[in-house]
Length: 403
Image (cartoon, rainbow, N blue to C red; front, side, top):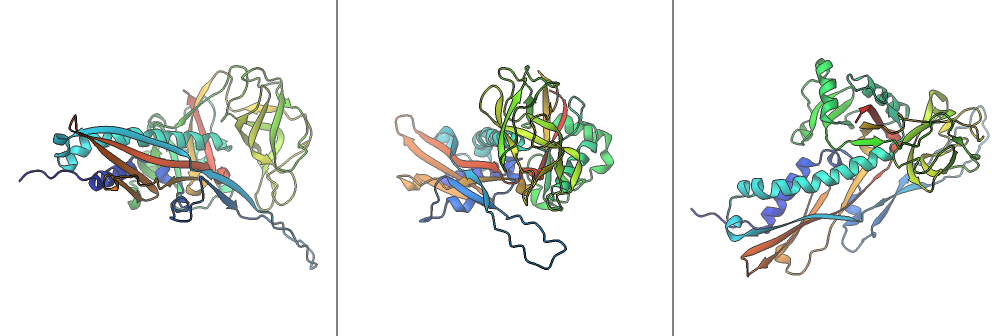
């Protein structure tokens, strides 16, 4: 019996299956907003506004109403990055059975495409995460650091249950598992059993092995002992900081720090925690000015920090790690800390050779056209996507040894 030529539908379905299997990080975060970008006749452009719940303060010790205004806040999810992989097949190759064709051509193609998208998302989300745990320069060799990260998630009221995850590189994972093998029992996460990277579940989180974790490189000119705030926190929600004693290229996006005497608080009661508030750099303006997350709220229903001298310009800044050093950062997070969305790309002319399919929040388009001179089918696989941190407080970076 002769082989049957592979159809574009078969190729598209197989590409989507491989993409879903290889999506170690993006397959483990929120994807509930995907349909908003693909509803025919109701397109929203490339940006979706995601609303946060309103926050209120309690009325205490009084029966008289104290009506509060509802303040709506939101973040933006932009779906504007188009990636793809391009191939060519001849008639002989198209006559292969699907398994062989997938192994020779589609598997390596999708591995390259999804690996790079997964890396971009994981790095971007880690840079957006301001909580951190662990000791810079000390290898993560037990679940203690992960336990401290779990504490950060709990203190910020991240939901408990089955939707917390950890991403570690294989070196860190080997160190943890070898010393605490009893904690790592076979996973019962049936829905995840075919996803690459899933190791096991312990301490209320699924552990994934992922070589794409981010290595944070501190710049050489970071001055740990003399850097201080230059100016006052004068506006609720301020995100811009001006720091003294910094020199050229002193700060890069993703570097993390604390400010002296500024402490974290319980999100609801506003009771001060014992640890300092942690921050991450999300944009750099010039030599000494940069934008940070989270924003500064020192009073009111959105208060997220407290401490003596919060509004003064004397707070000492302490960076995570040392100057001119690079550290590997694992990541613990609740599924809803981040979101990843794909949009449906349009079907082009010659639609019998242009197919789009969606599975579990991933939308892929495969488009083919023939080259009669060389007896080849030119094939492109495209994905249009975006990601953002919805609730970065529900995540915590785990710093380890120097990279």
